[in-house]
Image 1 (cartoon, helix red, strand yellow):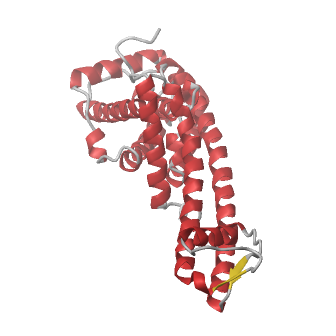
Image 2 (cartoon, rainbow, N blue to C red):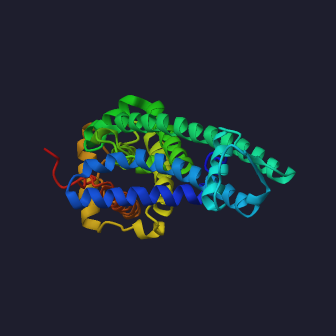
Image 3 (cartoon, rainbow, N blue to C red):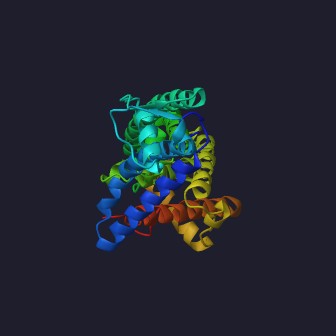
Length: 329
């Protein structure tokens, strides 16, 4: 299901991956070395492939177990009491298509089971290779998307420059990147658990940078400076909100409504004013005076900030504020 279906996740893959990641995260916290968590994604993938193999191996062994007397054994090889180890041996030979010939199916049914397991073994190898070769290029694409917005993640002025000077095409390109990252992480959940050692190449940086651009386009830049900014910023805001909701359900295991904690009005007004001030002559006039826009701004920033705090806590990154009271040094 994990490999073949474009949107579904196999339960074994999901549970195994989350288990490995949680154990690695616990170890990293206990020893005080967050970088250990960077190996969790790779370990999770390897563990999932191993679990797939063991389950198929043991499953077919259970089919052979009640039929051990129906197998044909080579007279040159001595077999003692027939037990589960012999069933595992027969299953392992069939799964790996080794076929030493010392034991073979003695009935039509057992021969068909042997052929079926050999075919399943080929399928398992193909699925494992396909999964690994599919997921690792996507980690590079996620890193590339994060670096695309890294410079504006903590800099509203840089975000304003990209909105105005980058033009409509830049905002559309960022929307496409956001959709691609969302779809990739839904298809391959392990992408969420790959913790990059480079802070500029993380999912946290990508969400933060995209949020900053969305805020600047939607609320910071005047329509005189960029007529397209408000519409494109609104679209980017909605897509980012959808992505955060999907992550809340699939990875934080929470109702998305739990993340929608609006800022208080005074805090929201100060952040909006700082956003517009950073845009300089491109900025909107009298930010924070429209109560409807202020309320939407407070809810969106509060949601993004709550999600980023949860993401940083999960991945053991230092917390980062959207539009803090003072600029970072």
